[in-house]
Amino acid sequence: MLKKYILIAIVAAAGLWSCNEDSLDASITVDSNFQSGAGGENGWIPGYAGYAATADSSQLDTVAATALLPRGLDTTQYGFRILSRYSKGNMFSYIKKRVTGFKPNKPYEMTLQVDLATKYTASAVVDKVTFKSGVSTKEPLTTKLTSGVYAFNLDKGSGTQVGKDVLLSGSIASTNLDTRYYTLLRYSNDGQPITVTANGNGELWFYAGTDSDYKDTTIFYFDRIIARFKEL
Image (cartoon, one colour):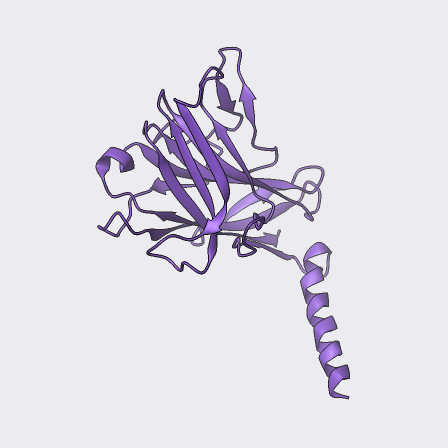
C-alpha cells in the first residue's frame, strides 16, 4: 500500500506541474540554473553583436559554454560562462532562450531575475560594461548590416544607454575588492512586475548579456535566470 500512496503523490505532483501548460493554472515559472554540467544550457543559446565582419582572431575572441563556477562562488555548481574580446569597438555578448506554452496573443504579468557573476571592480572595466536583459515577441538575432557590422536586432541601446527592449540593466561592479574572486549580482523587477503579451505562436524570447566598450577580455557567468508569469 505504501508504494501505491507514493505513486499517487508523484502523479498528483506531476499533474500540478503540467497545469502550467493548460487552463487549470494561470501561473508559469521558467527557471534556468544550468546545473546539468556540460551541455546544461537549458535551451539558452549564445550570440555576439557589434563587431565588424572583417574582424580576425587578433581582434575578436569569443567563448560560450556551461562551466563550473569560479572561486568566490560555489565551485561545485555550474553557470553559463561568456568570454568576449573585441579590440576595435563596442560588442554585445548575450544568451537567448525561446519559451513556449503561453496562450497566443495573451497578456501575462511577468517578473524576471538574472544572477550574474562578476569580478570587476576597476573603473576601467566597470565604466565601459553594462548588463542588459529583456523579453521580446521576436527572436533576438545578430544580423549583418550593409555597413559590414554584425548588429543586434532589438533596441538594447548603446553602451550605458538603455533601449526600449531592455527590462533589466545595471552596473557589473563587484562588491568583492579582491578581483581574483567572483561575486554574484542579482537584477530583478520583482517589485514592479510588467505586462508582456505572447506572440501568435504562444512564445516569448528572453535575452541577457553585457554591452561592452572595453577593448580587452571580459568573463562573466550567468548563475541563474528565473521568469515568473501570471495570466491576466
